[in-house]
Length: 404
Image (tube, rainbow, N blue to C red; front, top):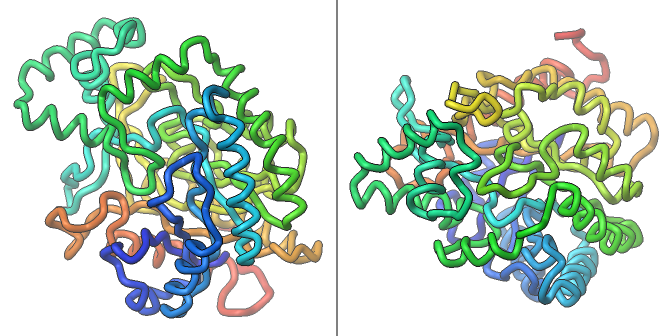
């Protein structure tokens, strides 16, 4: 697999020149200043490519070209936003950028309640705690009907925790959830969230999935013509929050959407951390089932913790080889898929991957690194993943070294 790295642009604390020492082979980035619904201009793309080229890299994957809330709900300026999305795809294709990651999560992008939860080894990791999220939902956002989504014990625990929180604690929790984590499409105020929740009234899981299929029916044929690959990122976490539907939380969800728009350009981003929060996730089996349509891989691991609702576990960002996902088996399956593609003669046989997220370790600590994207934690993850890949295929030889 091509060993890539997510880079947030010139303001990223990690410099492109440093990544050569890490062994990074390609860059995953986006033009975050352009909001959802607006087209990416050719000049903005070329400018970003020029920066990458000067640093010795090419732009391998766009993450993300965001899908607006209007497209997800099929309201307001949906038509113009789809037109802008198509314009962006054409401009990216003109610049020879072929892989575009996106997601279809309503309102909140990936969600954590703590950005730097202390770990036993002295480092820190991001954490999702359902009781903290219920505190936000019930007592900070005060969402209408929220109480119906939580069992009695969780409502009581949330009230007790809220009553003991300082004003600063409440502000931090709200900011962690609504202000947008790195790479998120938007940053919302409480008023924004309440307004957007109203726009999702009456939108069921079936309706949201139909809206996703409608969107793909518009853009995937164009991507196919342009020689591009679209890959949808799974829901993070893979269960409902704020009473909103989720449509990309399982292997079955991917089957439904990939089959509905059955084009090679309509593909999947395999995120082992997001999907792995679900106890039913089987990484190697996901690759075996959807392998030909996996266009990009986020390799990270999460560890489930007990919560007061069994279908919505707490979890934290674990070291890449230490969480609940069978990372070794998943990487093995991806390497087998690459071999299959190469034998088939596919030009896109090599799957771009990146070590997603990471714990804050050593010099990452102190609150100065980007939450979820520290240098040392991701370096450790990439080194571990590189070792797994090397065990499958030592050096440049063609002989496998056996089953794990």
